[in-house]
Length: 156
Picture 1 (cartoon, rainbow, N blue to C red):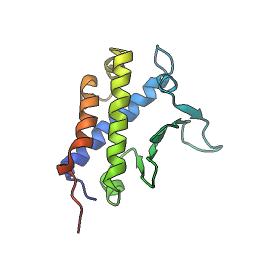
Picture 2: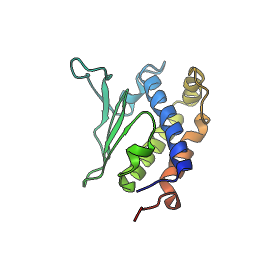
Picture 3: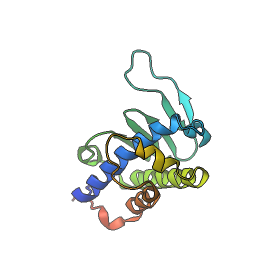
Picture 4: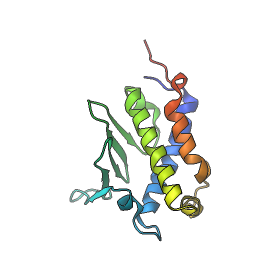
């Protein structure tokens, strides 16, 4: 699979912002929102520079850490995304796990923003880096990335 450069750039920016937001959710004034969402914490491997891992053990199974995430969508649909440039990471990726991940992120954000209005906007306001998009647009942007079949091309 090959994603057009513009789509990968949007995905990189949204993914970077989302990963930062997940980190803020752990220390929210409402309590740990990853735990509220049902994710389970595993301590980092001894001697590792990786933070704790938070895993959604449902379908799909998503494991978050400070370095990125791993999605296991079942049936062999897996995807690993590390923070940073995504073009090479996605070069050999199957598009279906990416669609599963975008839907998972859209649902996470929509549920969070419904349950805790204003939290995502407030958390993005704490970031030293200017937000790439508004908090309210995050569920929609994740959804658009997952629903736009025309954005993906399969290389011959």
